[in-house]
Every structure is written in C-alpha cells, then in structure tokens.
Image 1 (cartoon, one colour):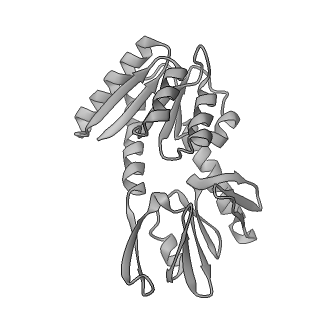
Image 2 (spheres, rainbow, N blue to C red; image 1 turned 180 degrees about the vertical axis):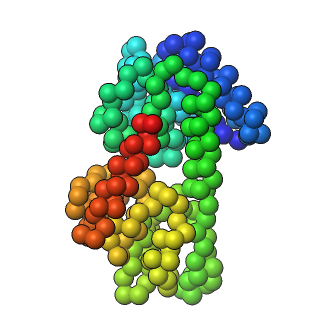
Length: 241
C-alpha cells in the first residue's frame, strides 16, 4: 500500500491527478490510498499528527503559503526525509530554491497520464530499493545482522573494519568498502576511498566536502570529486525532467 498526498488549491487539478494515480495503480496492480488538501495549512496540521505519506504531490504556488515553505517544514521541522516530494507548478524557475528540500521530481502543468506513470514508476522502484536490506556478519554481534539501506547515513572504513553510521549509533564488521559499493542502491556514492555516502542524508555539499544530517563533515577526495559532482547534478536534473 502506498499512501499518497495531493496538496493544490486548484480542485480541478487535484481531481485529475487523483484519477491518473488510480489509473496507474490499476494498470500496475498496486494498492494506493490518496488524500487531498487544498491548503498548505491543513496539510501541515495533518503531518504534525501523522507520518503515513509515502509520496506527496505538492503545488508550489498555493494561495495562502507556498510549497517551498511546506517542503522546508517537512524536511527541517518534522525531520522527515522519507516522504518523496513531487512538486507541481505552471512555472519552471524554482530549481535552486528547491535544492535543500531534496524533492524527488518537478512536474510542469498541465499534467498528463504519461507524466504521472513515469514518475510513479520511479517512485515504486526507489521505494523498493530503499526498503532492501544490507546483510553483514559481525562476530561481536553474534552472527549475521540486517539493516535497511534507507536508515544508513554512510559507511566508512578504518583499520580494516567497516563502520555503518546511523543517526544515533554505529555498527562495525569486517569487509571491503568497494565490494559494498557494488550492491548499494543508486542514492549511495563513493566520495573517498574510505567513505560511501547516502546522498539522501547530505545537508550541504561543496566541491571538497559533504556535511551530513548528523553534523559529520566528510572530505571528498580529489579522484572522486568529478564523479560526485556529476552524481549530484544528475540527481537535480532528474528532479526537473
């Protein structure tokens, strides 16, 4: 079951989008539940109490507020990095304003079935990837353990050990970082021979370093800088296609 939200002050757009989402779910045999809000305030009130939205279609030009402020509220105040935010707008000049919010995509009105099918197919693939598990063996932990990729901020190697960093703890096991890099979802990126980072948890990024959501400042080594830059640009480009 995918829980999908629509927030747009144009009731016609909401109705059309809802119909297209249910058409997609029928074609793909995927169960969805769609909720609609016509104001940003009513959406925020819901989100303060509930955390059930997997995907949110959010209009930027709302009458009483704007989608950028709502996106910031979701990411920064609620600290919700999981909901896939898909902005919808009649304009295309918001790219830089949206960087910190890390939207999944940006759709230009008028919407059509192909646009919704394409973005929903990618949402489903991302959801499936992020909910895969990483399995490792640790003698100290008594055998094999599984952790969800979506909960991992980054991996780092130190003294022939691999450390998995979460928001409030670390785990350690024997392994090779380059082997792990071959099996992680596409949102992970090698930024150094010792660091493999989940880009979903990057708070700030320069050409030489990344600051993670937990405050860690990680160096991007020279051989990886071009690849990291290209991957970050590609992420932004995919959001605007």
